[in-house]
Length: 210
Image (cartoon, rainbow, N blue to C red; front, side, top):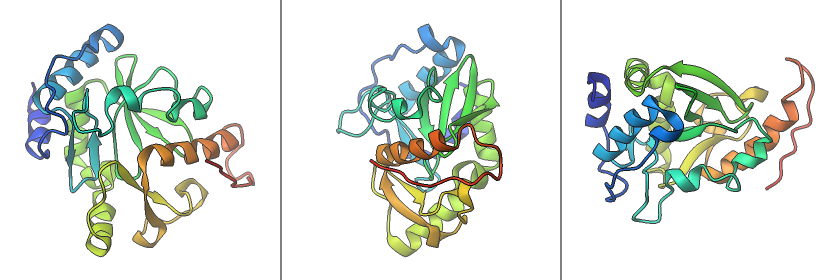
């Protein structure tokens, strides 16, 4: 395990699962899968940066969300109508922005647009980027401020914008509310599907159902 990954794990909460059996990811993700497996065998799921970062465990022993359930098509992925296919989603920021592995690359996945952007070529590079700019990459400042006002964020919840960021919503505490993570993904999938083929600046009707 390389330095940045070790430093990130030093900031982690206790594991979210006590099941430390090896979890096979290399068959689908190759080297990146081996690296992610090593992380999860060391700390099987965790929060960091005052819950702004959430890494899913391989298997839950407490009923919490785990990798298999989170990546099941019917939970939320199918709502993106192809935009979320082929990724292995393994972590999320405070807004429910996803971190995912595909084709030997770690991507950031915007739940409001369904767009994935390459972020790192290894788990250690991903950890390095988080550590170097955790306020931006995880949303830590708003996570901290929201919890000062409202108390700890419940496990399995993220802070979603009342007015989506892609529609001009502000990155302010007043624009945030806590919502269960999978419900938040389903709601924003509807938005992503609506705007997928529209050019920047086009008018859209924001109407989501769940």
